[in-house]
Length: 141
Image (cartoon, rainbow, N blue to C red):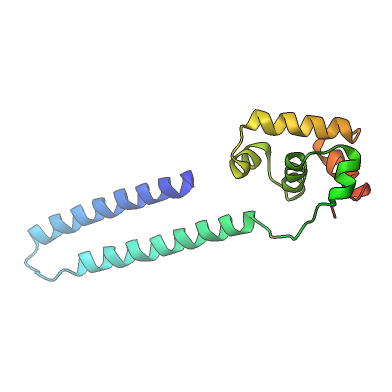
């Protein structure tokens, strides 16, 4: 998103510079048509549309919908809470701790604490192994 904002800022600066050049050219020439304004406006619109399409395409490819289920019976047997189960699902979907925290409206340290507890309950050493063991135990379907 920051890159998109920077691109638009640079685009606006470039268009303003070109419009200033067109104004200077208009001042020195006897031509009264506004061809430069039309050309720069079309260039601005075209570039804006391209940048927006790229940003939307990148953002939509980040989220891949997958219907995942949690087996609550197995979760209870393993002693995993509902929140820990939600975090397991989001980890399996590929979200990092910061994204999970934002999605669940909790602090990133809380996500890490839940993940540590789940890892201990499933006897796993890392987040990938935790999800793998959850699938092996049929907690995640």
